[in-house]
Image (cartoon, rainbow, N blue to C red; front, side, top):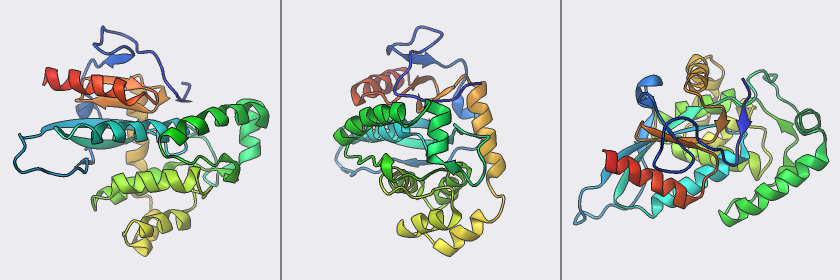
Length: 262
């Protein structure tokens, strides 16, 4: 089955209220394993009406630039909605599951995937311009290796035990796409964890085991079984999903539909 890092994609099946949205045939929260959820950080006004709680499952890969862009847009939308207490649930998706654990040289990968650097450079130029509008500094020229993202996903799950998965996701994206760090390297990942206030040596010991490997592969498999072939994909309220790095306005419409359906 093909896997795509996607700027946007038309929906399929059903008659969703938001163009491009997918009407889910079953609740995704039940289809996946135990979720790692936490409330999206926002200021609390004790005099304000109660905030609506809403789970948003984010199917993503940490080597996907469209995922970085799409998640930034999601966060921007959520900041504009203080009436919603969104519970983000990170769902791993492996774009390159058969990649060597050590990764591959970027030049070799680009030649195989895009037919050479020229086509990749044009695509990256488009993403760079879009990212700049969201405060992302894409520096594809600094990336020397395309890593396997398994260990990065494992680190996010581990960070979730301490309520730090959200911050670690952002930090891994920035380390890879802005700094050119090898996020397939356990030492680099432990350093990222330490910079987020977590125990770096403990993170390194965790990554030296096989903990969470099976869970990451299981979530990846379930995503495919649910018909998700491209990322990012956002599943709102366990009922509707939309794929691609959608504009905040599109995501907000899907949010409102989910809230109305309760």
